[in-house]
Image (cartoon, rainbow, N blue to C red; front, side, top):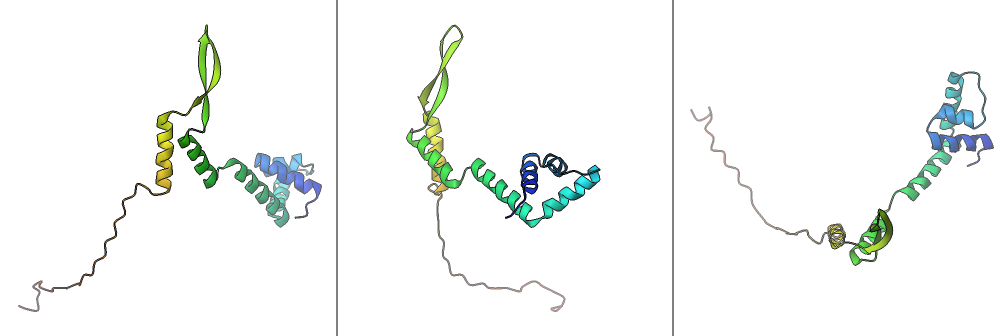
Length: 147
């Protein structure tokens, strides 16, 4: 992806604001009217190199913000095993309190175990039924043919 400096700035501002005209203006481009800015911003957004840069940056941000399956399973495992602590306020008198690390509550550990169990289908009753059955069709509905 080869972008010039203005295109890169435009793409970065567009990712930040989601507004093509604002990104066009902040990137240093000049135009006489908002309509021209809108048209030129639209052209930049359809440029394959600019679009690929924007899509790549958004994908990187999503990877950083959204937990993946392994990360969730690791967290649930730590909670279930009591390896994860949480800070709670503990009163020290006269309205003063301090944050102290406390072990995870048992109910939270049980919930984590339940969620892990669901993930691995440990609580699912599996029943396999195999049957060989014949189909018999009986045409005993009286009709106008028999009258």
